[in-house]
Image (cartoon, rainbow, N blue to C red):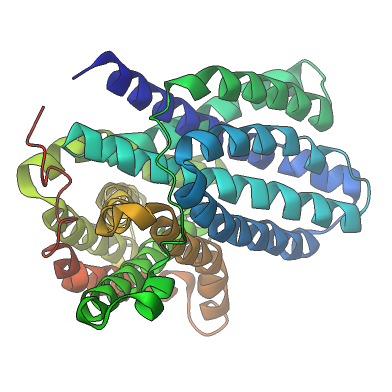
Length: 403
């Protein structure tokens, strides 16, 4: 393993951590921004749709740009833009400008998200063994760092705008310093979008191209299911312990902490497990473990059992999304950015839809009974995990061996 490849891996860790920190900085400042703008929770929920819309659009744009210009160009550029845009949500004093700020920040964050994942696919291919899950773990670590920094800036009396601006300046600096360590750009001269390839490919190649296209959309559908489950846990785990099991708020808060902790630990361990057992096994057994965990949450009347259930849920889901992103990137290396953007984009829709879907179901059934939807989605993912069995994206050590 040469020093340039090791440096590229470290730089990818940095960008994933930076992305998590930037998003986490926005999240920890939400209460203060909501109070300053003078909006209700319902209004904030509507504005967050603009954040998601911007991210989705950014993912689609960045996917094609990454394939054309190379990740070495797009990753640092989008990291700088995302860092600069972080201050925008801290400035408005009315809902309209806050909505615009969230749309721009979401767009920049979506661009960074897809481009860094596309670069992670290239790093993984160069390593010849799974490394994707660890990158996603550092994204979670970035969120923890944001919480610590947010607490420090709040205790120092800094306004949200000042704290977010300071983090943005730091982010720009980190993005520029880390840029040189990224892998050399591999631009393509024409669009390699699988949809376009279907139209322009020779007749003899169209069946293969159609097959790749179908695989990408199946992977995207699975990402939607898995990330819908993750989004539901983010917003409803603490409320489940508080409203269904009657736990005090101080105890209920640990439900999400338990879920997030086991998800981070699982992602740190997943790459070694993928090397040994393969990505299909991780997706299938991970989704099955998550189904068992959320089933415990759904039926158990005991707080301690609910904690165990949320822990299993996080552990099971932890390795699923990285395998789907990795498979999308390896399906057609020349179109890694476009393919990852489709899977990540639809997955992000699931992340946003999860809390809303559970909320809608609570109008019909009790909260814990609404979690049956999550059980079904995890079970469906486990059954469909065979999509990773065939093709070169089954495991990334396809042509390189183990280094």
